[in-house]
Every structure is written in structure tokens, then in C-alpha cells.
Image (tube, rainbow, N blue to C red; front, side, top):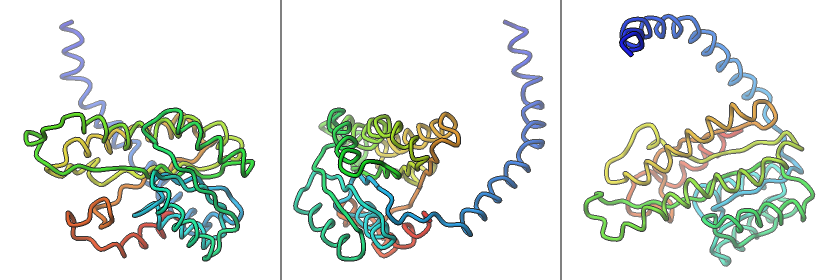
Length: 253
């Protein structure tokens, strides 16, 4: 045990520093190269099938519109049927060749399986999965009376993405598709009064970073960490205007 402690205290730190100096520059070059390539050669999503959760408002809604402008077929998922139908109608008007709506709750495993199956059964394929559904809660931890909300936030923000991704992976491998996970800047810069939300988004970040390694080149994984954006979810709680969503959406291509 003393030998292990000595290694960890005396040998591991300088070795880690040496490894960082050795591998960090090539890593930065590689990431910069990929950024340039993806900037110049943007993906053509015309005719591709995109499944978006949490599509009835906010980031999910605007992502649906941008995909529609680019000619993608859409499967829009949310719990509110009326709002979802309105988003679908707008998406059709601005260019999507085909749109279906699926009323589902991402907290339920069977619902996540169903939304993927309905999408593939209808369109015959799946190219992009956008894990966007999420909720928040803003309060000091000690002021929260109903602690069951902890589970609700984690089930929606993290498990909803994990469940849906699990069922979508076989279909995404068939098309060498893409997973887009909407995390948050709070996953790496925690905001006060949002402890459980921050934890859920940090879990999303780590989960999809790991999945990126597991899937390799079979499925591209993109993790988005936006700051605060005013929407129905955060109205009255943040200062950034909803127009900022447009810049965020455009940055995905």
C-alpha cells in the first residue's frame, strides 16, 4: 500500500504533466482541423429523418424550424399535443417535406421506445436524434419542500436522453447518423439555486462524452452547452432573449 501511495504522490503527477504536454498540442490541432472541415463542408440534411424531443417550444422548436428550412423530414416529440401540432404546421410551411408528431413522455422507457419505433416505421430510417427535452427548477436546495422533484428533473433531463438514445442507436448505425445532446453551460459552470438541474446536465455531458468514444465513427455525437435562453421553460428567470436561439441553432451546422 505504501508503494502505491508513493507512486500516486511522487510519480503520477510528473508523468501526468508530461503526458499532457505531449498529447495536448496534437489534440488541439486535431479538434481545430475537424472544426474547419465541418465549417467548410456542412452536412446536407435534405431528405434526412430527424427525431427531436421537447419540440413544442424553446430550442427544440427552433431546431425543428431550421431542419425544416434545410429540407429534413421531422418526427417531433413532446407532451403537449396542441403546441406540437402548431410547430409541425409551421415546419411544413417553411419547407419540411414530411412531419409527424408523437405525444410522449421521455421519462417513461416504453414511451421512448415507442417514439423511435414510430419514427422508423413511418419514415423507414433515422438519421439524426436530438435529445432536447428538459425541465428546470430554480430554488435553494434547503428551500425545496417536495424532494420528489429531484427525480422528475433527473428522469427528464438525463434518463429521457439515455433511454431514447439506447433505442435509436441501432437505426443511427444503419445510416451513420448523428446524436445531438442538448446539455447546458451549467454542466461545467454550475449556477447557484439550480443544483439538481446542474447535476442532470453534467450527467448528460459525461454520458454522451463516453458514448462518443464507444460509438467511434459509426455515429457522430455532438454535445451542445448553451447558456441561459429565454423560453417557456425559463421565462422570467433569465435575461437572454429568445433571438439568441437562432445563433445557437445555426452553430450546429
